[in-house]
Image (cartoon, rainbow, N blue to C red; front, side):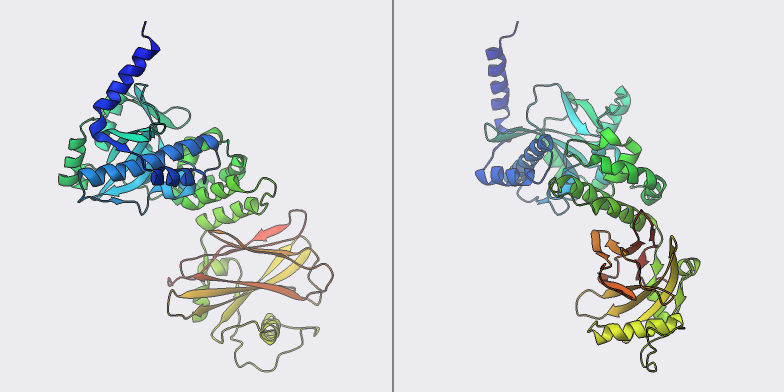
Length: 456
């Protein structure tokens, strides 16, 4: 029988034998790691993030001491992207001398197996050239670089013994698969070309997969509101792969799990629908309106171009009995300008009719280019009105979102009669917006996204 004291002594001797590859953790590194961990809502994942951060800082120090000519590029490192670190428990998208590295941090190597997230093995977006195993001894304020495993060798070994992923989206690999010669790792980083270890190509059909799963994900993802629930407990691996490789969906999930439980952000659930449509649906290119053109999608959804309002004749009253959409639009725009709403003389607009339940509405959209010295931007001005004399119905709502969140969510005042209401947003030329007009009792209509691209 092996006594615990003898086992402890042996572990200490093993640890001392690896002292050449050990790094003393600085107080600064420990404090920074603790700060990064606080960004993760689940306590168990907080601890793993803490170990991951200590692993990264110790690896940086080790590389600086052993090979100062090589630097760690952390620009895209997962550890500094809370939404990513919240979902995949490893340090990946790390680069050294052109190679992609994935650090696997463990708090104890008493087991003969090492746990690796399935994502950094089976998803090409996250696959590295080398997996580096780091033993973090937090209580001793020390870490040891234990070994490395090239991606191509991992594939060969896995195929030979037919290792499959566990239910929780992890793999268990023998510790003996990792090469303990760190000199070999340094030699590979110095002398090999990254092409010597081929990495899998990123699939070009991720958005197609997302589009196919859109309704499923819209129903399932809100079930992950509790930080204690993990992706694998709710989604299939195929669904999880689509979510994990989509930064916008990971950001939405992170917001959902980090919101204040006492004041939950109810807009996150309808926003998920907006986001999924922004990611998967074709957009109406409103830039073509400036060229007096409608693209096929705009024609499909019955958008009608309006004439330029600049220099037009005196407006007709907004309360006259009969008015064309162009006359109504001209009157609305001039009233907005009278109320100090800035609208470019180069702006062009279009309209389409909507039917919400028994309520007929008319939606006007106006766009123009903003010229500035920095990044070119564009404006989208949306105006909701009625094609008749009637006022807008009480409770009418307008929501406008982009790929970062809900930008505008306004409801018509109940104590006034309004012939129209409006909102506007500004974005860069690669941004898209999506609008939803709604009444109570779940009556709503979401329009195809708006974009402003150079494509014709």
